[in-house]
Image 1 (spheres, rainbow, N blue to C red):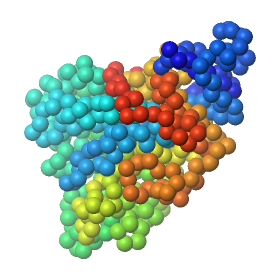
Image 2 (image 1 turned 30 degrees about the vertical axis):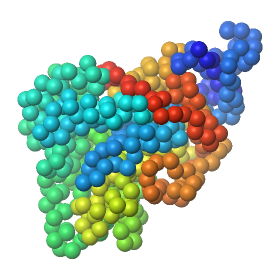
Image 3 (image 1 turned 45 degrees about the horizontal axis):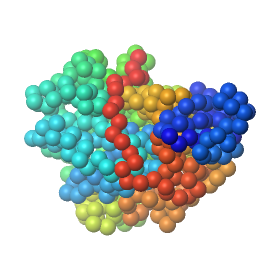
Length: 473
């Protein structure tokens, strides 16, 4: 098997940093050595097949994006990134594992939904991948099927309090699914918005002539996110189920999660780059139909209400545990345009999978989070939260050699004509400048990105069978 030595760099973990060399044997990390160590020989550089010089750079575990939607049907169209194009873009951005969502739609069997996503992804992914299971129709049959998910390597499922008539589960259905969660150890993931009330707001706005993309955000006020988050927490408290709230955007929802955690409840939350950087006024409120680029749910929040500051603070204090992307891209041409004249028909989603590691590193530069916290919220915690830690999310002997060599002295200009490999006809972060650069990316020991060149191939990625969460208290 091929051997690789990453030498001269600073290995950064969630708990600290140190100068160290990393020896890779095939797909696995074999040793982490002090610089100059002769433990494995006096001239290790000449004994290995490949040497990667990481002098002056950070060596960190590859990013794990635990919330993506490749090829997801939505609103009469389908997310524009396939598993091939989306995972390749992820690799370009330093992410080496994604966890996507297999969908059981209303009237379908859970097993059939999971099989359909396996068929989409198998042999097409550039990096490793796993699945969460969306339960879109909670009934006796789907509840029985949930008993077999862990055997399939799927240890988490997602419910929706939004999208009536498509995905929305009643409180009674949520209660039943959470009872199953408590009994099996499966993690309940929740899209927490009061969808029934939101639909009324949206219909009223359109009827009164308020049809621009800006009103997508107006129709989904923070009260609807806080209320649903509180309701989900109470149902989880009643049943004893662990709860993970996806794409938290409102500071009031953060407060609900923090209170539950202070009370000792297994409640967790993620946020996304769009909620840390983008806003209702500057993006959804862009001139004309341009705001459609940033239509997503939960929506972008008002910058004047200081949600961004509170989300960064929550990341520092661990009231929010990690950052995923909710990557669900739709092109403007032929997709977002479906909502011209009616914001309710704009497909919901933003493409971010390529830029998450860079955007969060900029948070380090700007003083929002520490270097170690960057690693924790982008890799280590996702691995622990979703049953992959030990193989993923850490640089230690025996772990998969998923490694990102990141240059803090480099520079990245984000833009459609600059750094852009997603199958998307615009960049949601056009003009953003990052004080750092993804230099080298290894996926299970194979260099897939190096020196601004893609060296990977379709099919490099494998399905990851995940275990139960390793993050519960």
